[in-house]
Length: 136
Image 1 (cartoon, rainbow, N blue to C red):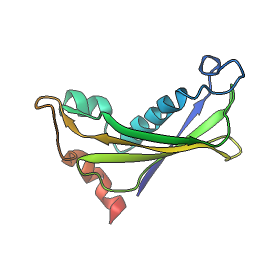
Image 2: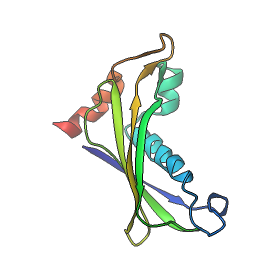
Image 3: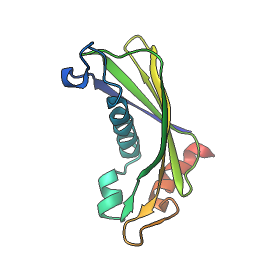
């Protein structure tokens, strides 16, 4: 398993009229967690797209809301890759507040998609080579 933590602060514009983090913004926080997890492996989404022609479209996402986040809360987005990717990669995400209370949890499944052929392809070796040591 590979895990990475990213911290985000809830901005005023991300809250609803009750001062809660708007529910639609959790998906964006999941994305930040995914992007930074890939970056922590020495890769970037931009490199995967522009250099290697691999896109990562979301094919499934589910989440559960446990308790709210509020304006100016410092959150930890904990992202895990629990299985070595094949044609798909699943990111498991938990969002915690500063008191380490769970606010939200879920998972996002993406496929590796070749931009030129418009087909699902196996995970690129450059990603697998960075992850294998965590799954041995």
